[in-house]
Amino acid sequence: PPEFTLTPSSLRSYVLVVGEAERLPQLVAFLQGRLREGDKVMVYFLTCACVAFYSATLPQLPALRGASFAALHGKMSPKQRRRAFDTFAQQQQGAVLLCTDVAARGLDLPDVDWVVQFDAPQDPNAYVHRVGRTARMGRSGAALLLLRPEEEAYVHFLAVRKAPVEPREPEPSAPPVAEALTRLAVADRAVMERGAAAYVSFLKAYQEHVCRYVFVFDKLDLGALASAMGLLRLPRVRELGKKRKRGKGSWVEFTPAAQVDLEAVRYKDKQRERLRQQAKAARAAEEESARVAAEQAAASEKSRLEEQAAAEAAAAEAAAAEAA
Image (cartoon, rainbow, N blue to C red; front, side):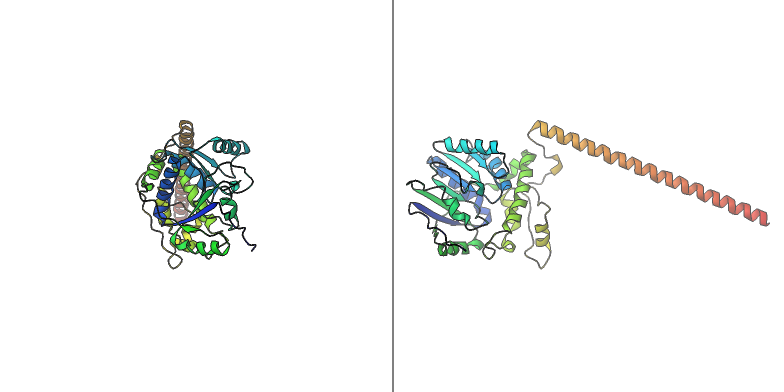
């Protein structure tokens, strides 16, 4: 593969290696500190669904409530992207842009202080494009890459690619996040659905990493990931089915933080909830209609069989009488 361009001397690059349960708390603590300093931060995620989920939840966490957040990903309309770009670009200080690689090149975002890669890019060539959003036009900047312990070989890979990173110590007082995410999911069906979609999209995207010898899907703790995201249940996906088979990967262990009736979780948006209830009522009516039709058909068939049996019995009696 082509050699990486050296990262500029004005860029300080760090790596933070923490387990699955600590990744989100560390991100939240980091953002809290940077926002307190008035920094502008870009945070990269692996998929559009991940950006949608975290943009719906991170601003609601107590540690980040009131901060300026914007989201930018490839499934947004051009108008939505422009609005997100302007929101972040026009903020003088203390702002966060959650994004995918759609924001890795071709965008002139001024005065970005930090680039955080919560998920490493699928294509390692995108790494330098991502960090290139800061330390531009003579300004200094910094970048932070989060890795799981089983992904730490990526540090050596980056060094070989002439994009070295320095180790960074974890934030000492990272707030708990998983239970707060669970509460948000219980309070709003939209959050619950976005969490499930983000989880599924992440699993699928993770398997498409170019550096598969570093980002090994079978080493992912899928249960811990679901817990860290505050999911209320494990989504039904093919990747989980493979993991659940004995002898193939590890068994998925997951217990949600809250035991709730998923059907009872409502949308906060009253119109969406009204439409859901209407659709639910329509499905119930269809099921009841189908049940009644099935019962009527069964009764009709039973009556036909009884009539047929009676006719056959009468014919047999008549034949016996004639023979006598």
